[in-house]
Length: 322
Image 1 (cartoon, rainbow, N blue to C red):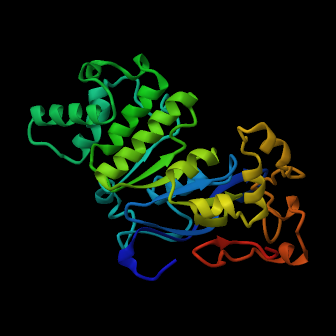
Image 2: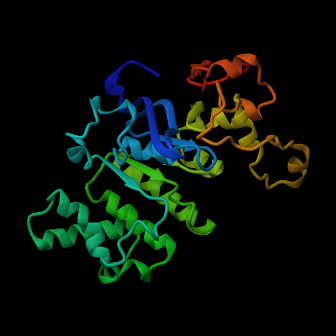
Image 3: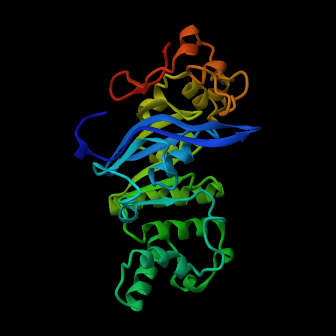
């Protein structure tokens, strides 16, 4: 993963995020994220995929200190993110939330929603300057100036997500966590929003952590892809490399589920059906969390979680048998 600190914008090291859950008379930890490490270069998009409940969103929120990590560290431009400096770093790191219906205040006009970060960080001198900045941001994300006085409920899902993106861009950040930003949108709108993210990346030199379910969307927008399962990182590689040569059995099963538009190719391709159910994060299996559903599982898999190791060309895999 490299040792030059200046090369990376975001460095996540051994991040753990445990939530205490009451179970009868005792409290047990729900291990939402368990020892996750990765790095993101300036101008890079890292896609983060995995099924619901695997800890993707928790990783994003922990990086931005919306959750205080249980242990591990997050560095931004080589500086550790802490309670003391997070307010200043908010200008550099922003988030676009999954649900555009619940992430916007229904009592605020679009102008006030987008202007709120400008108010918090005092990024204007006069009301006129504030208004001009907001209108410019609205144009950037494809909204009309006359939309400024409307409320969030008057917009479609795609337009609301654009409002959320404009709000994130208001402080001119260099890194944005995109938490499933297109999953609540129609397919036709998804393409527009994904293309807008790509255009903004080129224009503003942005870096993204792009969290999603849809591997095709992630492959389209990402430079590298990381695969998570039950709080652990299973595989991390360049986007094309991961799609063409998946090594981890879990990644292989995810890729086999992607619909193929050509009927003949679809008939020849074999879907990998995983046996059993996803274990509860409150009762995790010992060793590798995927072993209970893996046909390659051995005794060693039950004893110890495999380390995420480089198999060459920056292709990292956590598996004893692959």
